[in-house]
Image (cartoon, rainbow, N blue to C red):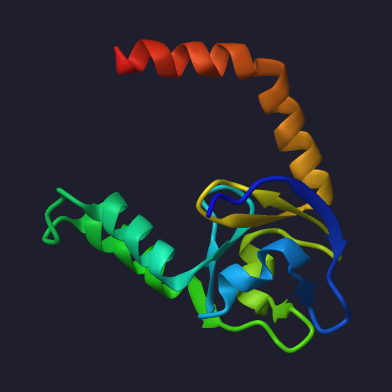
Length: 145
């Protein structure tokens, strides 16, 4: 499954997010909410989060301080949960804070996961990327080299 699109949504008074209908079946086996590397919170299928974190750490010595810091970041700043009967997920306070989320959010398809961004933060980030997308693509091309 590839997650695509942008959905402007609102967190309710209990910090619950209604997951877009088209993606709810993808999370039937559970969800991992995780702090993103930018100011966002990612919504992962558990097996995909495990694979992504393993790939990020692969090839690095577990004895290195950086390995341990990143592994702790991935585990301590994540939260296993499930959708409720209405297709909602409750976002814990620590993830709301780490993602700088307010009531108005954008849920963004990011390929292997969805990301929850504060709506204003997403508009700013995405605007900057759109202004520089040609340079970003060229930079990736030259680094692949």
